[in-house]
Length: 322
Image (tube, rainbow, N blue to C red; front, top):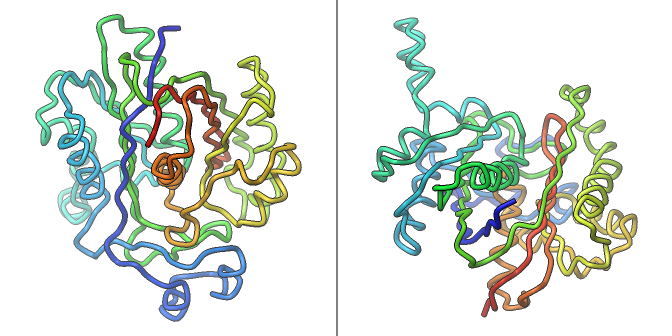
């Protein structure tokens, strides 16, 4: 496989920051505020009514345009967790006209046009749940290997819950969010080492308790199988960067995996909650900004999502992050 590197991680969040107790009082939750606080959650971010998922996607893409530039982007991979967020067309127009073109106003195509990425192909990815960002990174590296002339792939994920939704899933407090990164041939940031995915389609309709019940077994499997596929052991990992879920869950899982809990990063849990497909990016950004990553260190990005799908991507730091 051609060497691929992942860099320029950015994210955006809904504008309204709500305390878990205020959201409980407003009827946005299923669990009590006390139960979510005991799991480590304190705040979450909700979009203004006028802000859609595409606005979040534009925000992260604009940041990349200003910081690293978007020249020579050959493809845009745009994963969404909620299929409704894979269309920015008018529901009212669809209902009034019966014309399905209003259900095919694709955000990836909008992004290509709005940022003048005329040479980029667009790919939507919307059946990997919260693991979509990791799936897009894996797909991008495969595309670079297959397309000899391609140099850079832009990965952008964006989701916001419908205005009347409960902002809780599987006992996790949810934030509206977007994240982006660039996968490229140029050596910078993190070298892509390998990835693995496990999907159990028989659990697509699992309830919250069933989802939690499978978390430990399948997360352990996806991590250990990813390591095995790449000739690595758990002790080779310097960091595990994961999504924000019950803080006690990873204390148990760390013992199950045989890894020091100090290596497991979900530092944004209290402030951000579970940001759908973006919180592992937020945690990685916080780890980078902490200055604790050194060249040669190995990181495992691990996420569980609806489907039920579990994904793990292993990266090697090539840069001294200060």
